[in-house]
Amino acid sequence: MRYQLKQIHCRPWLLNGLSLKLIESHYENNYGGALRRLNAITEKLESLDHAKTPPYVLNGLKRDELIALNSTLLHELYFASMGGEGKLTEAMAQALARDFGTADRWRSEFMTMAAGLSGGSGRVVLVYVPRDGRLVNQYASDHSQSVVSGVPILALDMYEHAYHLDFGANATAYIDAFMRNVDWKAVYERYEDATKVEPPRPVVQPEFGDLPGVGVEEVKAMLESGRPVQVIDARPRHYLSRQQDIMEGAVWRDPDRIQEWVGELSKSEPVVTFCAYGFHVGCKTAIALRDAGFDAKYMTGGHSGWKAIGAPTKPWNGASR
Ligand SMILES: [Fe+2]
Image 1 (tube, rainbow, N blue to C red):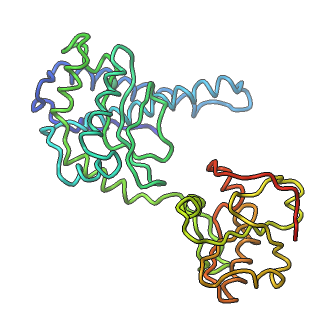
Image 2 (cartoon, rainbow, N blue to C red; image 1 turned 90 degrees about the vertical axis):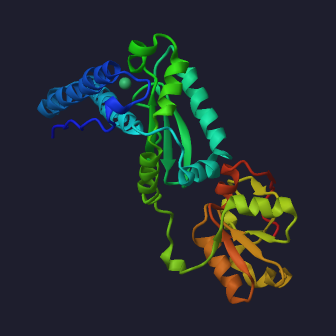
Image 3 (cartoon, protein in one colour; image 1 turned 180 degrees about the horizontal axis):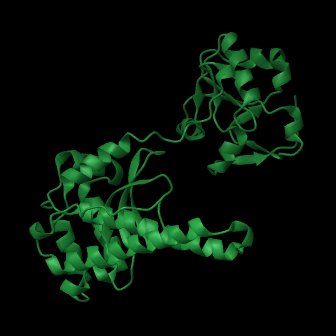
């Protein structure tokens, strides 16, 4: 497969404070150069005999392919980021405010990051992360740095070739000029498209039906706020011999002997139960408790999830019951 040129997205003659000469040079030499390199590398990769190619030769080409491919993608986004009047739309301002506090706070972070790249090279990219449903400003000191699964919606090229012809070493004036030309309507359209990207699929356990789970962060917040909750560590007995700690705020109960301890629980307070990782034992225990009339949920992630967020545990000497 060969990669095809994309027409420059902004109208270069309409840009405010950025010369035609600069934009043409950038598009033809730097974007065009990356595209030509990408196609040459692709051709080379397609012709390789893997049986006769040392792995380092293949990986060198794959590294160059990554750099050239990202360079074409980010240059296309850079040119598509301009062509407006730099006036933030209300809808985009709200999206930025949700994830950065205020739109001004986003702007100040974005521009400060750009200033930090002046005299060096790299890009600042506004990226939507489907996993978290939020926007982040991403620092990229070279073409190969990108947020995995992130959808970039605005890119500022801080390589010297992007501004030196017009601004010399005055990167600050270039950053200001870029911001004056941002096409916020187009950025918002890309944002809307990005929000339609599905997040990675969560763990599904259809065998447990619609059993409600509760995240480790929420359980931690419940305990810290003093909200009443009964937390039952229901790891199988054999797990306890190799995991020498227990979550702060939990009591261990043997999942194989529910009938012996279920009478201790209150039906007026919620119950959270869990096992090692959030799979079968915790879920089965939660189901048994729900069947017995308790408001029980299982903690997603289990004991390992609790530790993975850095939540407190205490030493545990073994099962007491
Ligand atoms: Fe560039």
